[in-house]
Length: 413
Image (cartoon, rainbow, N blue to C red; front, top):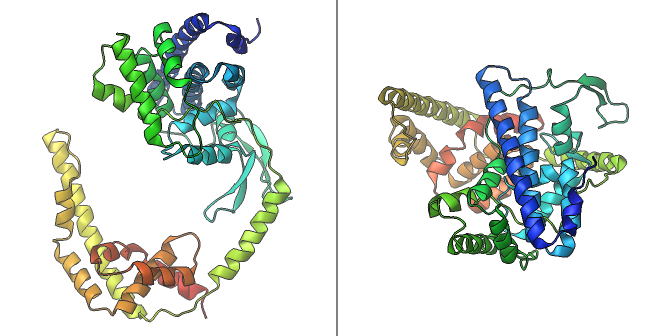
């Protein structure tokens, strides 16, 4: 037997809906089976293989979304859409698309383009290392032992990697792609009749860059309404249905989801140029902050006293929650109490005693210490445009005041 998923594009609509309905019912069972296996592995403390199970759940769920896209795309696009069914990168992109919160189709396009690159730069400063395509690497590293090389530099280190020696996941959550696939199945949109309604609803929808998430949701609601009117979907409440398909993304049938070859030499040159810019940018120290180290140390000490008291309040909250055996969450009144503490009042008083320029320099130092790129001129100027009289916001930067000052002094004069 040979793989023949693309032959579905040769069928009439009625036969197409019947076959895809059969396939989806099998795929959802397989995806849920792998989801159960992953949960059991975690319960039994057998963490090796959890990543692999998640990859399999995501790929099987993505296959359902691909089949539904083959229904909701124009007939002339079905063959190319069904090609995604066997492509691991395409399936990974379908799964990731369920996690993205893109306001419009143009942003979805940018996210997809980013995920297609065979190699990319990343790290704490965005260019620290060259990595292989994350979807492909995550999948294969969950399955195989391999001998690899760090190609950030031409003479990079060689070493072995193994699923058993890599980070073992001690937690498992059901991938959002499975939640989305389940939702569509629960709505009975994957029955032959449901797929017919899906096709009638979506085949006229060809999103453009400016197409918004609101327009996408309009089509989702239209489909749900039709499913109910035709008495296909009767056993789910409106609230449950709308919640379930919230993460169903734009149709992806119009995209090229194949791997996009990246030139390693270009990445190395880009990295080199960026590092030169970074070195020059991070060496700048003008204008000098006017707030003294002594004041920053006093403010930092006061902040950490407040921080410890907040942590104690949160610990007390969780202890009481466990005693009551009731589900409770941190609520706004607790955050109000944080600002009623004497330690916070002392901190705010000290902030009020600073001059406006001192407060702006204090905020700039916090950002300078917090962000990966230490661009002092930018942070200094930015503070002049955003810092007003919001002492609660300024106090929240306290964790980074001293860090920013030490970073400033380390490479300063």
